[in-house]
Image (cartoon, rainbow, N blue to C red):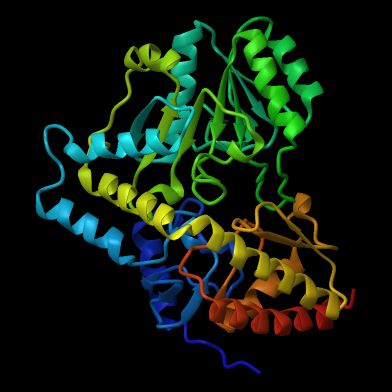
Length: 414
């Protein structure tokens, strides 16, 4: 049995927000997409834990939708940020941190020769498309059907996620035949092919790339003079520190990073080959806050900490324990689930739910039950693990999950 958690402070803030913010909230963090007992507003975070404005505590498996890699308030990151801010952070030009971070990124990425920094993942993917067009003199970008590369007219039409942007042609992830067809349809005008590190369309089973697909895409791009862009915004630094396709033995021409790179600080990066450096120099991209030093210091501290502590191995270990534990618990209650994607970026969907019609009652019931037990897991968006997760966190999560699966089985009986 659980006791219903307080929600009055959150409810009051929602009401105030509706008076001064359109719809009260916007974007992907809008809690109206979530079960009713999920909070909209949070007060603080520490390590693997998050507290909402009513004081309810959660083990966090969303990590601010990806940015929190080392856990909230990580001391090395916070110290680096504080030192940069104490010196003054927003100048007429960047601090030395920009050069230091670029050197570190190039050092850990064997195929890359340079790094370019901005704020959001969208900044990096849009600039990658622009650089590709500058370099090739072509305009068409090839992209996977249903893939998300940012909220920009480069990728979506008129702010509608369901509409394909002008200047793009779609292919199917893990389908080389469809890639060849897209190249043919471009009729010699394909500037770039952008591909996610793995398929992560919201609400649908994630899909890892096959070696054959990754190698085949590389070969097709080479044969047709097309720039290969790896969108590593979601996977970067949770799968492999050298890039998410490094284990496949496939190197892109450009790779976009964001989310985990700064452990919550606003920074993104684009990395690329020397052959594209002239095109970068000839493509204008800038922002008033792109050059601030604190986020760059945070990224440097985050990457160094991951390397020093073998953070990837920790993520893989706790991720595997969660995946195996969830499967055992689901099986014990006769609940059909599908777990897909990297173990450090987990997604669990339920047999019988249908995301094509947004009819996902099992996922919502499961996540709502977990939230009442102090575990924050999004019902249909992939989760993210942090290195702050402990064995005790995993044990508590699996205990709560066993009760949540029992509730799903009791309600749906399938």
